[in-house]
Length: 451
Image (cartoon, rainbow, N blue to C red; front, side, top):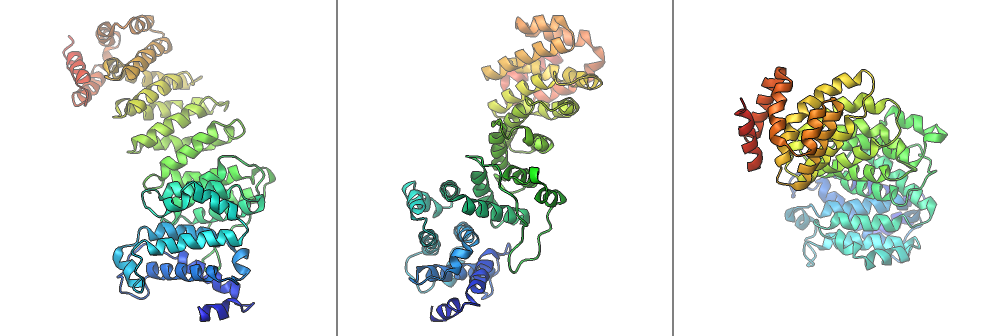
């Protein structure tokens, strides 16, 4: 500490030293090197965090810590997350002189965060986080993200200038796309955005930090910076979200979808989310039923917004993505996808109607079979969708049969109405022979046996 004290109280050196320690903390290698290697970035990161912890505990902590507070606070928060993932060998190679156990490095960083808040005059916020169990939650990998949410919500109650700086730095970090911190940064970012939503925060010129290479930001971001009407928190989020909707990080797309869902539910933000509609549609094809359920809710909200001809143009493509979800293992996804398909078929106008008719014809057999779905809500949704399909196709007999629950008659009439679809119906029926639901398998067998 003597060495650090001398450097930190040298006016020309203090800020530079703190920034360098932050850079070491943020330089968490994606490649785990041997724990015995002195230059292991993961161990160096832990050492830098420990050094900052000691510095902050000094009674004469330098003012430069306050000057770079947002960067320092977030770096410590990311370090807590990073430390929960360290191997025992990595911890022991650094923590050899202490007896507190493997939790000690994490507690050390959390303590540094609490001390830093007090140094900034934010003791009430520190205590509020403590009262909600936020600091304790940060210590466990299982509850860590819940702790991050609590910390973020309390930090958004700080003065506006500080909130704005934190938001800008989070945006800066998320443009870099680093798996070491992106989940924690996105959780904090989302909580910074909602609730409550605050307009009017100008997006600054973003930089990557003292020792990092300049960021290569999308052209749209540079355009936003210079445009008064597009330089708000929402526009910043809309520029970031498409990248993270395509992320391979477990849980990331669903996290972003939940944030978008909240935006679509607010009158002051809903319309602008329409730029994300194509990206949300793509999530329907992902192998993630929970994410699909959220994406369906988002799309349902988006399609109720006035958007000119756009819904009509995307409706046929969306119908294609919805039909596979009729057979999802989650009851809610099956029900939501069928309801949304029913709505989508009425969005088309003009030339798009011809395309949609093909989609509706291909949906009839799956909807017919799902009249026997074990989940009553799904069965009811299928019945309603069949009625709508009959109206859309101007097939009054289908409307009547669906409304009165005459499934056996619909089965008989499908082939009689359109023989050219016989092979298509056969292929669809064969798929249902492998259904996890026994009633659907039996109905598929019965349909194949129809004369």
